[in-house]
Image (tube, rainbow, N blue to C red; front, side):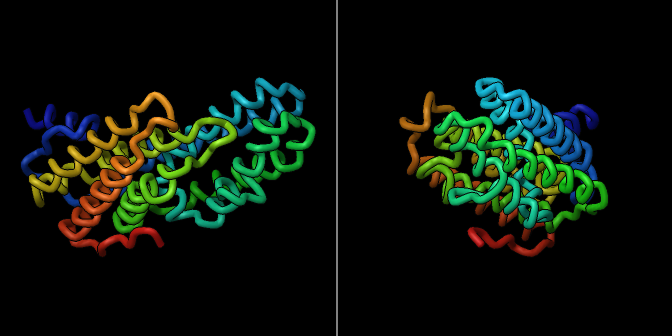
Length: 253
């Protein structure tokens, strides 16, 4: 029974074991490493399509490469702010994915994307090396978790992060997938032990935000609802930090 409860907590916000330990930040590392691998390989594939001069393949590869980044925003911005700015700055990006985006998806100019893509790949490789030596801690992960939960509604829902590629909605969906994974792997058992009602609120907030993000397109997204649910989830995660003896994450900084 205990094992079943633990497995449920890790994969789907199920009940936590009766004697849960404190947050284990390193339990998240294999998942985080997998996202870094996905980002690196996806960016390599994207760069190869640019070198081949294949516009449609480059568009598809750009979209695929960003999945690893969006699911990893729970920790990437917190631990690697320089890489965050270089790789995923928006809306007025001078480098990274969003600098390449309009060149490809609006201008259809593969040749014009070559230099920026080369720098993007180098920045992603530098991030891979930095991640290998980065320790993870509960406070940093909580900060990132609450921060990206808030950002979904505060910055992304009202206009979209990737308008030229048309992936703004999936960007937010991938953010939520990353939030659920990090919470389940690192925080769910400890929060459930410290405050079962709070654990249930977090799960409920995540589920309801997921339902709101399941819109057929960004144009019909109920932005006010997403903003409210995003803010509620972020607030719940702030409360979780306090329940675990951590500092309250600052939102919107």
